[in-house]
Image (cartoon, rainbow, N blue to C red; front, side):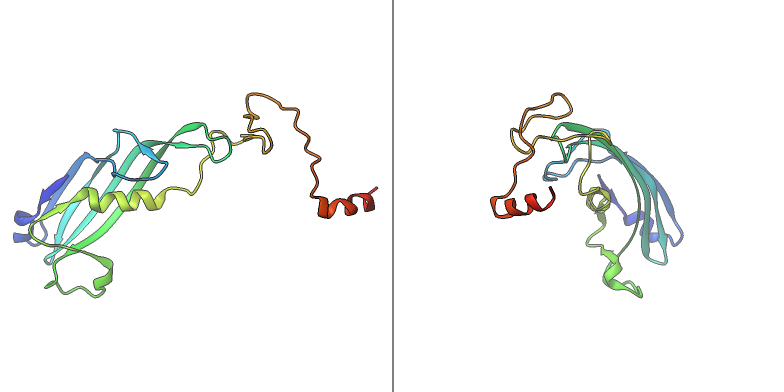
Length: 163
C-alpha cells in the first residue's frame, strides 16, 4: 500500500488513521501467507518526522517442524517506526526509515516486522510425534516396525557395560 505523505508533512502534529490489506512478500521461504494479512494504525507528523504505529494481523501456512504436515498459524504484530528524510534532526539516524520523495510503501515497513516476529519452527500440535527416522512413516497416523535399537558399531562395546 503506497501512501502519499506530502499533505501530512505540511502540518506539524497532523495525524492520519490508516488501514488496509498487506500484499504478501514475494519470497518468504516455506511460509505461505494468506490473503487476510491487514494492518490498522496511525501516521503522525512530529516536528517533520513521521511516526508510524500500527497493528498487523493475519494467518499463514507453514510445514510442521516434526512431521512436515502443513499447519495454519496466525500472527499479530505491533509496529512502531520513525520515518524521516536526510534533513530531519534525529538523534539516532540508524533507527529511522529514510524518506525519499513524498510516498511511503507501508508494505515495506510492516512486512519486515512480521517476518522478524515469526518463530523458527512451528508444530501442527504440541504432542506431534514426527516422522520415523528409519522409514519416514508419519508416527501421528501409524506405527512402524523399524528397529530402534540400531547402535553405532563404534559404540557397540559400551552396550555390554550396561548389562
